[in-house]
Image (cartoon, rainbow, N blue to C red):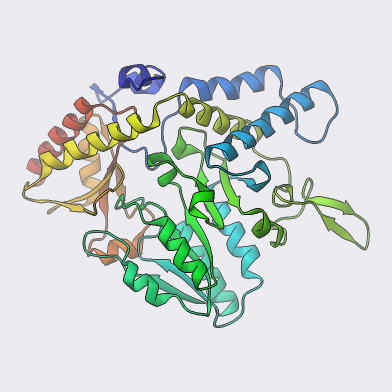
Length: 404
């Protein structure tokens, strides 16, 4: 389907509402995107007509639900050029990172090194700190340049024969910087390390091919990709998943259980203990099928045009500081208004119907790196319009005058 923003918007009922008597301008998609009718219908349709638990029954409803659930896994796999057996369902990208950190971490010892960066989301920092606390692992942080890029020369210098894992963002949730993932992976592999990429933002604002990247692990969440909350994805190379021990114990993840012995299922089910998020997995599959029906290249160009329109209008405006100006970045704009806390800025913008994020964005080290305690963030999605970009700039001008 050719990209038509008006046709796209018509598929998102929530975008027609008003806030404080103003048309809603939703610019918080980096935190959680809105859901198209196709996703809502897939989930409610299954719940109404064919719901049962998966993998546990031989009756018709169980078979139908299992098929829908596994079809969603196949859809996700194809979307990132993986095999279905390499796709592990998790409750979130956060759980996916924790799964890898916990299971891979059991093989580490004091002095082993993990390389992360100053631009990481807390979900890709805290699990590695657990390994520092438990096993004496050394964390090394790749610095960020003044324009918001990963310092690749510094990154090269941090890699050593002791490096066991590199865990970096494919795209920063604050700066919008899209990192050179292929080069990150190549250098890490040359040093003998594995690589996990946090793809929560990149999966939305770029095309991802895990085989081309040669990445060992790739994680993303459903709710930023126009799907539901409560579902995340861990991609792992088949041999990497096979080498990991189970993360949780319970039904589904076992081969057999006796009083004195347990055997485990093969991946991906080894890591999917208990009743999974069935409707949510089907919803994510529907979201990806919906995206597959859109001209992604045109959609990505549209998102960039929205971002550039705002940046061009803010260029040279006194009292507004944009965080991250690296070339080729995704459609995320974090900014600081002089003399105002980000929370106050967001509340004023809300009075004009404009929804933005405010705070540290779960990236306190990055806030410290740029010398701020918080920032506001406008994130653009394929359903936003140029008029909404202008409405944001207009509302921001009013907010600036309010605080001046």
